Amino acid sequence: MGGSYGRRMNSGFFNTIFSNECSCVRGAETVGAGAATALGDLPEWRLEDLYPAMDSPAFAEDMMRAKADAEAFQKTYAGQLERLAREAPAQLGAAIAEYEAIEERMGRIMSFAGLVYTGETTNPEKAKFYGDAQERITAASTPLLFFTLEFNRIGDDVLKAAIEADETLARYRPWIEDLRKDKPYQLEDRIEELFHEKAVSGRNAWNRLFDETMASLRFTIDGEPLTAEPAFNLLQHADRTKREAAAKEIGSVLADHSRIFTLITNTLAKDKEISDRWRGFEDVAHSRHLANRIEPEVVDALVSAVEDSFPAISHRYYAMKAKWLGLEKLEHWDRNAPLPTVDEAVYDWGSARQIVLDAYRGFAPEMAEIAGRFFDRGWIDAPVRPGKSPGAFAHPTVPSVHPYVMLNYLGKPRDVMTLAHELGHGVHQVLAADQGLLMAQTPLTLAETASVFGEMLTFRALLARAEDPAERKVMLARKIEDMINTVVRQIAFYLFERKVHTARASGEITSEQLGEMWLDVQHASLGPVFAFDDSYRHYWSYIPHFVHSPFYVYAYAFGDCLVNSLYSVYQNSDSGFQQRYFDMLKAGGTKHHSELLKPFRLDANDPGFWDKGLSMITGLIDELEALEAAG
Image 1 (tube, one colour):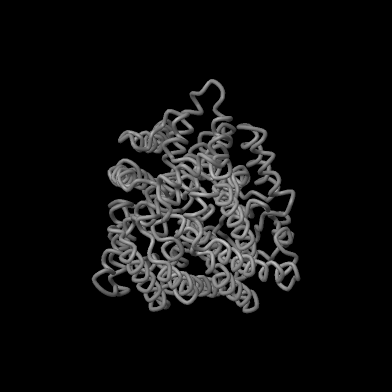
Image 2 (cartoon, rainbow, N blue to C red):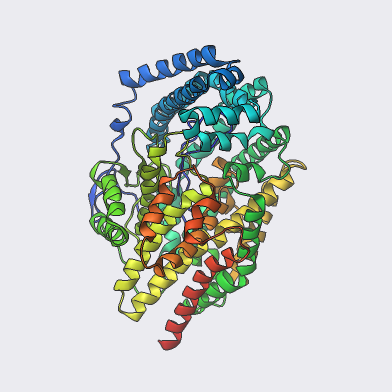
């Protein structure tokens, strides 16, 4: 659902294309690419800002230049960094700038290849193009591996003196300090090179297998074969029989493919265990915490606070929803069912654009101006297409270009919120780009701040216009469900991942065991009002976060709780909030979360911080209960 510049221990972010999907899959019907429908003309992105075409000379030339530049860089600097730090700090600063430029070219290449592939993952030509690009860039970047490894072997005192002596090194200080945090976990150079090169035939290959398998699945519902987006969207249909039919068909198809999804899960979990063991990580999630530049105890406090809130939030809300639906028990296909009192609105593309930009403009004109570029300049791909990756994301590409947003837009209110969410990412990525490739990198936890804040602005703007109590009730219920999906569901996913990776250390996990782990966390997080039939046992297998970014999911809960606290500050702020907010986004990855939150008098290390964020959700439930009592 979101994306940020990726943090890697070595050699940039270019091997990952961020296609992170919200846990609530959206979609309603298959819409032709760019077709004029009741939703209006849905835009497709224009990737020529990266390269004119897959076979363009510019792409081929950059690929060759990236390889040549990396080899020349290694020849010039390998074995010289300690000496340069002592004798010629300015040359060491220039080396970092040169390294950044090479990484940027490689990132541009892989952004283009990844976005082309994302748009049609089942197209053999595009899949080959992406696979070949990934192989060639992995090989081309291998000569760069020495740089960060050798840089971390420079003595602390020597490096400190060099930074004080050179302005360029001083500018890169945040990146250098960040890099040093990886030092305890880096391996001998040849082992790092092996890990790097084998990624193409290892983790990256399994990621691609998952993506192509998911894109190729067809769910036959009412006699019509559907891709994942429209099939999952039927779980939001007003007709319960249609929801049930869709839910059981989805479960059946996922079960039919459980062998391959179980193999992917076992293989990737073992791959991660090997890497963690060699690097010296003691906990299954600690490598993610390091990448997010967040202390494990902060994550533990978040997880504990959300777990403790299950009864007051999700259990309480879904018990209310069961009454509204006239049911003693909810099945999993009732979780995202619309309330029966009001027909759900459908928003065409023009309306969605206006709603989001108006909400952004009400906060700050600059925010609306930046978001408007995405609409005006072809930075959004909105239609549902066969073979297109499901879900939504904002991919930053590289600072010298601009981000792109991918949606599967079908006009539901949640789609409008998704648009607001991804444009929040996009605004953040545009503002942080001035830091340059190495320092625009935003940890996943903070990368969700702008996206969730954008959603909150849009929701509050719509809620303020709702005068009818029934309409207000529906909007509050929908927002609460979205927040449950973002906070409760994501922490449940995190707990599921911990179970999986912990169990995998003792041997392979069967599909049956994975299903039991999945149902355990669903019962605990959603509450006793739910009954889960066997069709839900395999739903763990469609969530791409588990495959692409293990333990990513808690970043959503972190971002939501953070934004709840941040929005409370905004509501009670006299002036200056907008500027402080933009300063936070512009900082990119140059500051720790504690430093970024200090101007707002917020501290994620404070035990009460998470309770403050969660209290906004319980407050919305209180308001919903009051409306229900008054009605």
